[in-house]
Length: 305
Image 1 (cartoon, rainbow, N blue to C red):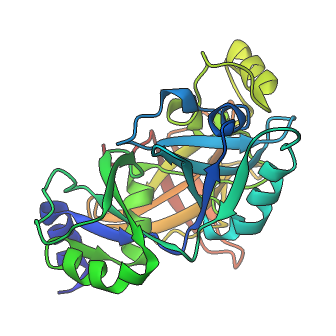
Image 2 (image 1 turned 180 degrees about the vertical axis):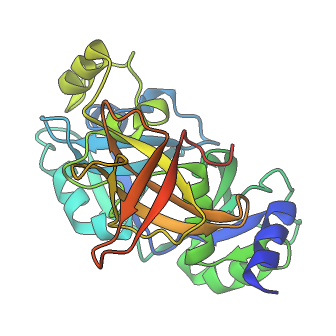
């Protein structure tokens, strides 16, 4: 199949994505829920054993240290994040363990992690056993995370590939951009405030108790705006990360693209990027470092609901 056919099949049959390379941790100890709840923006106390929640880990200034998905079982919490955060995020969490009964163990190499997107409602066949299934929203719509020992990775990938389309990194990034989902290393970094990336809609609970960074997030909610906002962009011309955005006739940058891909659903190039507050033009000029330029249309997220 060519990539357009693979995309169409994924929409019809569902897609499975191998997230085994993501950084993973087990958090144990009697104080694990209270401790992690004080470190992240979502309410860990509301966790059910069959679902995961998305949350931000921040500094006291409200800037991101990373974003995580959190699930639980009877004995521990399970966290996963972008692979590049394996060392820094663990260090950030451990820094605040003082007299808490909490241990954080790296499980990156011990567990495999798959996500079934789009066709997640499809039942797994009975021969796929001893796999933990957790409801998780990673691409704007409900999906399923599958957790198992790392030794079963190849076996499960083959079995799941007989049911769902196996999405490579490029196709998974297309789904992500169409869904308007920010990613660490692209739309998210240590200078990002979660509200700028729209994570207040998915990863922040404004009614929970105190956590690190809460004061800044609550203040921004009262103000009602941030200085830039993650938006979607589409164009008939090729788009790429790093292109700067300008209002027509202006030489003052109004924003920048952070990630781009060909959207088979829109039949156009699609991108995510940040746009400064106050820019109200529906079309902008996107300029690359080599001088190449094209017109882009500004759209709300998600690009494909």
